[in-house]
Amino acid sequence: MVLAAPGHGLELPDRELACAPVNSQLGQDYLGAMRAGINCALANRQILTHLTRQVFAKILPKAYLSLLYDVSHNTCKVEKHRVDGQLKKLYVHRKGATRAFGPGHPTCLRSCARPASRC
Image 1 (cartoon, helix red, strand yellow):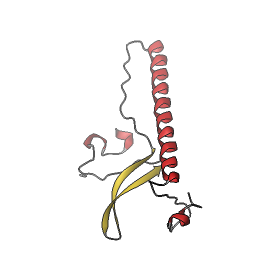
Image 2: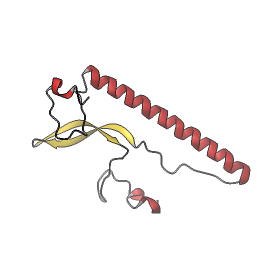
Image 3: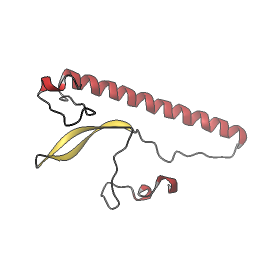
């Protein structure tokens, strides 16, 4: 993507950044690969959860392990951001991080708007 950016007329301010037009073949290939990775990670988390519950059931048969929160931390989502003064829809890939919203943000879940150690 870094090598292809100039061919799409894209100039990046940091060499750690990469991008491609979403409707280009490269952009579509990237989204497809990223979505496949998300599906694989989801399946893996479900398998690990199931196996963990099986182990607990052997030791503590009456224990109930509920899923508190399951979120992909390596995904691409459409977000609105200001670019050159205009609000635009952008695909943002946060590798290894989820989007953070401060307290009081309309999409913030009140029960999780505190340090993870207290959730």
